[in-house]
Every structure is written in C-alpha cells, then in structure tokens.
Amino acid sequence: MTNNDILRRIRYVFDLKNSALIEVFALAEVPVHQQQVTAWLKKEDEPGFVALADSELAAFLNGFIALKRGKREGEQPKVESKLTNNMVFQKLRIALNLQAEDILAIMQLVDFRLSKHELSAFFRKPDHKNYRECHNQILRNFLMGLQRQLRPDEAAE
Image (cartoon, rainbow, N blue to C red):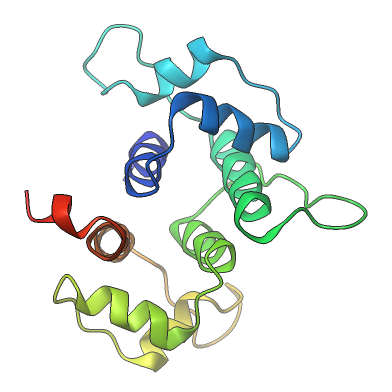
C-alpha cells in the first residue's frame, strides 16, 4: 500500500472532507493547502498526482491522534522521516484507543484470523526477537474491517 492509498482509505472510512484533512495536518503543526490534498488524493495514473512522503503521512497520523484523543501537553511528537506499516498500524491503534481484542474483532469483520500473539508482534520494537513486519495485506484488512465497522451500509458495495 502506498502512503496515498492509506490516506485515501482513512479519509473514506472516517468520512473526512478535504477541509478536515487540512485541519488534521494543522493539529500536527504542518500547514498544507487544498491543492496539496487534492493532488495526494488522486490515483497514481491521474494527471496532477503527487506521492505522499512518509513524513507527510506521519504528520497526518500524529494530527489524527490529536483529533481523536486530544492534543498532547507540552512538546508535540516528532514527525518520523521513515514510516513502516507497523508504525502506521500503531498510530491508528493509538488514535482509536484500540485494545488487542478490539483489533481482532475488527479483523474478523473481514474474515481475517489473527492470534493475539501475532498481533502483539506488530507492536514490538524492531530489534525485539518476536517483532514481526506488518505486511500490506494485514494493514489493508484492518482498514477494510474499520470500514465495515464504521460504515456498514457502504461496506457491502
């Protein structure tokens, strides 16, 4: 999944308009304008498409955490320059205040079975012996499960 795919899916699942996306970036203290957002939301083969950098998606996810959980006191989290699926998954988990059971239930909505141990491996530090890389399929299924949970009428389409 590209960063643009992730942004488009989050936008759809949470029914965020372009103006809301701009506000989410602002919560992370990253100013963006309408033209940037429009270019990021285009498909790869459309004219005017612009790839969303890891640091830009990280800023969006930090802003999303602030939107859902409230802005942190004091110094704001640093924006990562390199982003992995594990980090995206972790930031979404934090933003939505999800426990392991919640995530497993979301995954079951798309018939994707995962054990609690497999799930916890995604949230470990990369140098931990039980760390496991989160592949696109897992992140995609999580986002599809969120879509089924939050937009059940449209998920069937």
